[in-house]
Length: 425
Image (cartoon, rainbow, N blue to C red; front, top):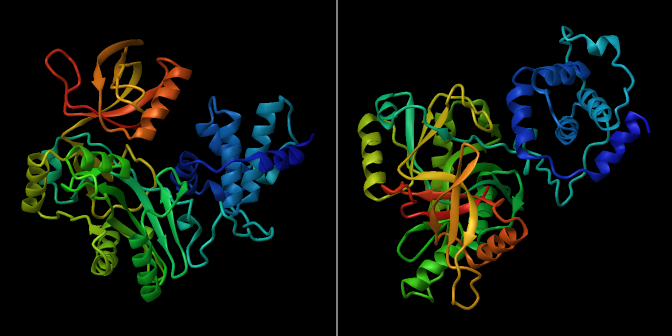
């Protein structure tokens, strides 16, 4: 098998390009214009970042380069993957492509344009970076400075942190796509949301929103899933009240034919308000996440979030450019939290006599210096389906299942205080 046959075989068996590959493509390859260097760009990337890289990840870069229209660069990755997996040397790169000083733009693919499929939708009006299933969202990192720094700094604007799941909405007059943070496409959350999005797109054209989908209980509390909100309603004595799916809008990435990722964050927030007001006028299931700009507004935001026992705040540089993923060097978007989020191991499940429940609470431990140290239990935050999945995973791999837990801190004895399950790690 030569390298060409190898690549064809891997394409047929390929899964969806992961979000971390997309993130590295945008932040490491495109930012340095390595994609314009043909095979030499792949050689340069692997030289800089490829120490110990696995075959699967190299194949991911090859597939990503092809999907973006750069087959010459893709071939550089295919050759490296071939060598890693077979131990054989592929045909040497030609002198022109192997010269890392040659910055001549690589040609776009001349192969037949991709045909839209269920797992590969294409929206003609959108650029490649904003196609459904290919949008890498900006991710906040834990703030390196105290909350007061962001309140005092006029370059940072604040938004309340919502307790849901990140969802990008791509709305056209014919269809709406919903993309998760991991770039997977998901089902519509509600008919009301779908109808309003299509109606608005029919008026203003295709648009792309970045926001948070959460479910509201009868009391207004926010939850990641409808099951969690329904459980709150049942336990509060309101079993007939159905949870409401709410889409909270952070910003707009595309509107009126313009790719807003090329503009400052302030322009994206403003566009998000404009589109959000149209949607909110059609249905109460849309929320425009408020943005605090002045010192007084930011101080009020922080005080209100703390007094209401909210999750925390997100602070964004209002003049920052759009960079998908996490940027731990320039900190364009950070989060300050009143609750801790911990990645913990399940070390046990407490028994229960309640029918249909596989356990009562999760016993968890934190890894410290290579040892698992028990720090208490988690008895809330999971739906019935999640409980079954937790029990199944723990039975298969005891003490190897990792979950993300939110807690209001630790007690004096080092145990979790008011902890709740968030998701699997």
